[in-house]
Each structure stands twice: as structure tokens, then as C-alpha cells.
Length: 354
Image (cartoon, rainbow, N blue to C red):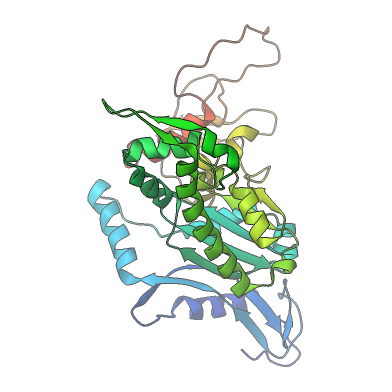
């Protein structure tokens, strides 16, 4: 858009371009999400355009599109289960990137690879902006399916993959066997056979990851390397396989410090990482509890339906806090289901719409 001579870019200009982008309707597709805009003033990139003089102002958006049926299916499923209206759709790779990648990571250049059960997503960042986002229809579940070709159940294949499996085969595997425990039909399997199956599929997934990253950027430009997320990345030797193929630094992800309160163990646990990332994108409360803070000295107070849950102050997770004057008491074991992990798990597994 053109800016009148002698004037600067305003918040209204940004809103105007955002609204134009929101109205975009691709053929036979639906816009499911949108990456943050990249602004250009007279052809020059500018991260903070408001208040800057220019003649031409542009905002470049990367849209995540998909079949219209995806949104309809999600909407109908939510409304059928709980009778609640769908507030919106959050694109999980974008939410995950904001939770685990620092601005420095995005500036230097990095690829966030989320190894899920069904799919693997690859998000590439450089100079602070999203360069590419794609989804590969291969995931950890497919490796498990492959292992069942050794004549074992899927549940046992998953167990052996996690406990004994590796993404690469070595000579020592020929000398070892693993016990497949099935109801009434226990059998021994060569470790080399197990890992040969895993290696074949793991290499295929890594080759696809390499190809998708290479299409977006030269790997040597990934100053912050490749960051791994998702439960499937815990497969032994997978990091080494990726490092060998891509020849860049590879590390595992964790939720950035300061975004949520919790133990380091939980913030780095791939089982909860995506759930936490999506929760951080929420703008409205979906539970009956309300947290209020009277001042910086007093702990938050949890209220339910407008009534105090207890006259004693509680922390954000509902755990009772002691005042400084109280004598220290011996630590008691936590009752089941009161830990931070359990709180997050409950939100996504219990009655979501109660």
C-alpha cells in the first residue's frame, strides 16, 4: 500500500493489511493459520515499522492452508462431543516453534523437526522469520507397524522399539536376541533383525527431512542447527543419524524458561511439549477456575465460580503455600494426580467440556 508523503506507518495500516490477508480464500482450500508478518518499507525489511517514514509499505504473510474438510471435521467433532462452539484452530508447528525456539535461534537459522506418531513436521527459520513449513506423512507409528512384520503384536512392537530398538544397526546386534512377550506365544528375535527394520524406515524419514530443509535453505546457513521435538525423536541413535546426514548441530528441544512454571524435567518431556505449546496460545480460559493476584507479595488465589476455593492461599496449580512464619513440616508424599505433569495431562485426557 502507498503511504501519503510526509506521513509514517501506523497501527491502522498494519491492521488494514492484516484484514485483507484474512479475507483471502484459496481455491478449494481453507486458511488454517498464519505466520507473523514480515514488513517491508520501500523495499527494505523493517521489524518495527510503526512511526517510520516511507512511501511504500508491504506486509508479507505465510499462510498455512489445507482442505476445507479439515476445519469442518474438527468443528463437527468438537460440537458433537461437548456441544461447544469451536473458537479457532491453532497450527501446532507454529505454536511449538514459539514455545521452544528463541529469537536467537530464528535469527541464526534453524530447522525445528517434530517427530510425531503419524507425521513429521519441518519448520525452517532464518533471519527471524519462517522460511518454510511442511508436513511429511511419515512418523514413529509407521516404524512400529514395520516391526510387526517380525510376527509380533503392535503393542509389543512399540515396546521393543522404545526399549531395545536403534536407528542404526551394528555388528554386535548379530550376537544378541530380544524376547517378544505375547500372550502364550513368547518368542526370541534377533536384535539385528529388529534394528534392520527400524533403520530402514528411520533412514527414509531422515532423507525426507533432509530434502525438505534443503529445498528451503542451504544447511550450512542453519547457524542454530536442527532442533528435535516429538516423542519419536527418543529413538536411540536417531540424533546421530540426522547429524551424519545433514552435517549440522542437532539438539533436543525444551520449553523456553519463563513461559510456564514447572520442573525442568517436565518442560523437556516430549510427551507434554506440544500440549504446553498449544496451551500457551490460548487467550481465553476453558476451565471454571479463575486465578487472581492481589499484589506481588501474596500468592495467587484460585476461585471457582466466583467463590474462594479455600480461605488459605494456593499456588497457580492449586498446591497449598506455607507462609514464612509457619514452621517447616516433614515432606509428605504427593497424592496421585497432584503433580504438574498430572495437571497438564488431566486437561487433555479428562472431561474437556465438563
